[in-house]
Image (cartoon, rainbow, N blue to C red; front, side, top):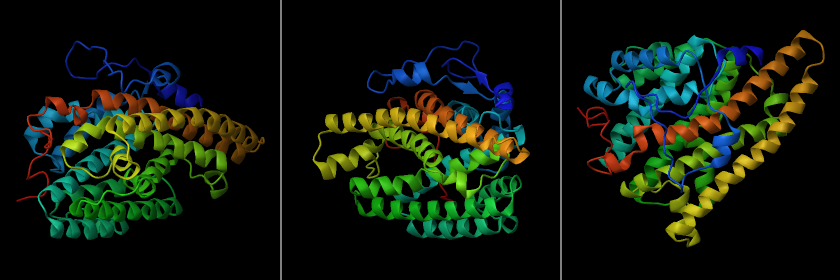
Length: 371
């Protein structure tokens, strides 16, 4: 943990805009979580300013967003802030690869959304198959004519360089499942099918890429964890709760945006449709689940710390595994604060400022794959 402490900075909840004056973020009362603000101090990796700059350049070089959109919106979307607040202690090159991959993921999500909105199932199907292929053989897709495929291949080449082939195979297996989950979401939205609450929760764990971000904790720590640790009930529960919090808090914050965009994938929307809740009651139920995640994580965190203590048996391997578990667990904790503030700083959720509440200003038809 010493390394993580050296490489992580505690920061107040301020906007990281490029303007000289920073102002405190005002969180709407309906979305405010005092326990996060009080008990989950925000950390920001010291590499963050360079991270923001280099990811902006990478997006431009890979043609993932038009130059004018990058200039106007990239910093305000806060994609690098989200990752710099999560993977505290990661080596700079690892954090850069993760941040670029995260930015790519948001662009992919936007392409997926626009393909649905504009009724382009053939374009989506082609992209889906190409991403599966690039995931398995990224080197052969680095020069692909679709910038989204080439950018993804670049991310995978870098991410696959950090840990052994066994970790790479697990990561690939997890992301193949994410791609297929996006296909199920495509079909649901195209057909207007609102999944039941249980169907939605299972699908959300995949579309939110729970296990991808959890896998990357190991890359940040520089250590592949054995199954005995990853599948330990305490560790696995802490990991899942941190991701569930992020997914459900995202649902809470994005509900107005998604209702405006005729979305069908949101916990609140499933509760309204299948449980007969009013909008007000659905919001309250999502918030209850979010708060329960926080409380349950604090319990799981203690159990995982005890696991780390037991692993440190005086051997070099034991010390290494113990330190890695503590690093991963510390970053699971970071995810709560990073996700929380991201939703109040990123232009991605400032729907009221958009000219058209159903069309994000940072995407256009060209960015979404239309030529």
